[in-house]
Structures are given as structure tokens and as C-alpha cells.
Image (tube, rainbow, N blue to C red; front, side):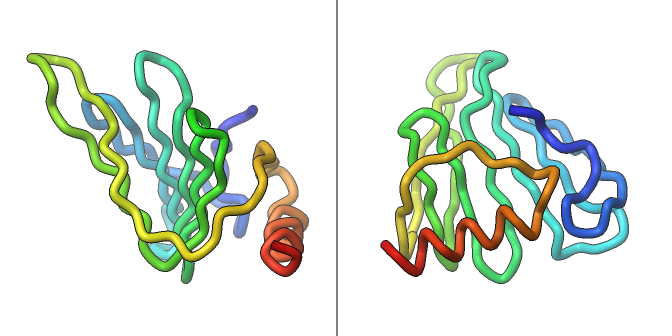
Length: 118
């Protein structure tokens, strides 16, 4: 799984914002192209793409959540430990596949096909 460094929609550079245990990548020119990438202990756990609807690849549960609102929060357990606390409202859960952001229109077509036949 290759994490994109350029926006899959417009090929512009993605700007990184770092927090304690996750990073957010967003398009530098367009505010509606947003990627949320969470790393827990250097392991990729969540990729969320936000547009009009949100698409979330959860690598721990091997689910793809699609909905109008998916909030992924962290809660403090110890002094430096963060544990994910999933709070989401998803409309659809589709079968698992790893995202390939190199061909974004093809990825969106694949997701639409899964939604249609789910």
C-alpha cells in the first residue's frame, strides 16, 4: 500500500499536518480534497477520504465504511498512549480491498460498483 504524496483528483501536492499519533494530508489548492491517515505505533490503521461522502478504509477490522459522517477519534489511555475510539455513522459497509490511489477515477468506479451490488 503506497500512501499518496499527490492529490489523486487534481495531482497537486498534499500538505501534511502531524499530530501525536496520526497525520492528515490535504490538497494545497482545494479544500474539499482531504485525506486522513492514521498511524498507530508506525502501523497504518485508517485511511479516510472526504468529499461529499466519506470513505474510510479501516485496516484493523478490514472494512470499508461509506457514509455522510464518519468520525474517528482517539482517547488518552496513558501518558503517551492513544487508542482509537471509533464513533461513526455509516450508510454502507462494502467488502474489503486495498485502495489504489494511482488511478482515482477507477477507484471511485470500483466503489460505486460495490455499493450498487451490496
